Image (cartoon, rainbow, N blue to C red):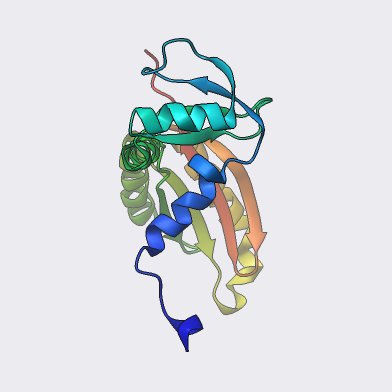
Length: 186
């Protein structure tokens, strides 16, 4: 019965697996770094734990793969908070790629083509990738050359806005072309 019981601090349980603290650090010697250390260097683990206790802080292993492992004396909860904030900051700076789709038929007329071309220009100007495809229904697969010509014309008309990432390729009943925006010159 007791085995099925949940632990109240489930999120902290996951974090302690990433960073070993205090007595969980089992190596004989560590490299001690940090702002509150007078002379950083290599110390025995027990000596470093005593120093952390004296400051009423935790000894946190930051880089376990280094030789000797690198540790810092800090407040563990504050350290976890800073790590989460760094991860969130990195995630927000990551480039998010948006792919917009434009669908054609093999016999798309000029008005519809120009309408979709303007949309594609707007998408590429906003920095989104464009996936244009010709969808072949039933026997219209016989016109696959027309579809390829249409997509190549589309790519040529968008030459100043974006570059072709993938040439027209037939996948099942669709012929697909990918366009990515050109980088803005500074």
